[in-house]
Amino acid sequence: MLSSLAAPCRNRRSATRAGVVGALSLVALILGACGDSEAGQSCGPVRRERVDAASSLHLLPTAAEPAYASDPPTSGPHRSGPTPRGVVSDPLERPVQVAVLEQGGVLIQYRVPGSGKALAALADGASVVIAPNPDLPAAVVATAWAVKLTCTRVDVVALRTFITDHPVVGRSHE
Image 1 (cartoon, one colour):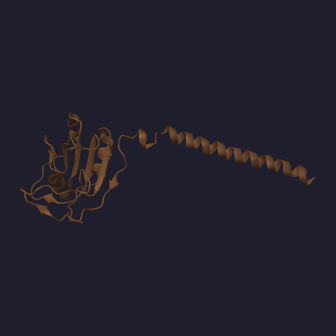
Image 2 (cartoon, rainbow, N blue to C red; image 1 turned 120 degrees about the vertical axis):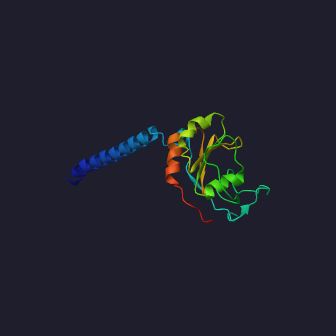
Image 3 (cartoon, rainbow, N blue to C red; image 1 turned 180 degrees about the vertical axis):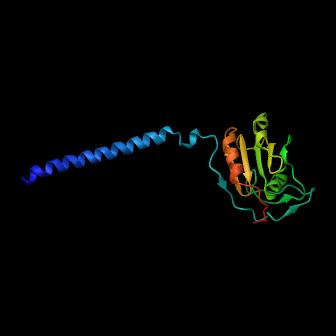
């Protein structure tokens, strides 16, 4: 009699396990369809970089360009004085790039000629600088102080989010 009562329990457990496995498979299928893989994204994750110990150095206009820990740099020695704002037509020297960031700006650089037109709407005239850079490792790279976003193509939504997440604040040589 005991064995006849155990059979329905075993069947219920098997059905429950099958239901759980089916539900997990369905969730995995749905998440995969959402394109959560990095291959489908135009921009990678925002990367934090170590602040260069030489970030407090101010370079004279005639000084040679120093070596930087990353390219484009997110901190390091920089030029003193006013920095460009808005959309610029010529590539910026790395000491000037860092000066933009040190003053709290966001720098969006692009490698592909013509991309500046699509990016121009992001320039606010005060804190966001858009500049060409034919030597970039990717199509578009956005930098703020000690952070970087690399994109395989112009992605205005991702870049606007980067700008919003890294508001203009004066840096005190962290």
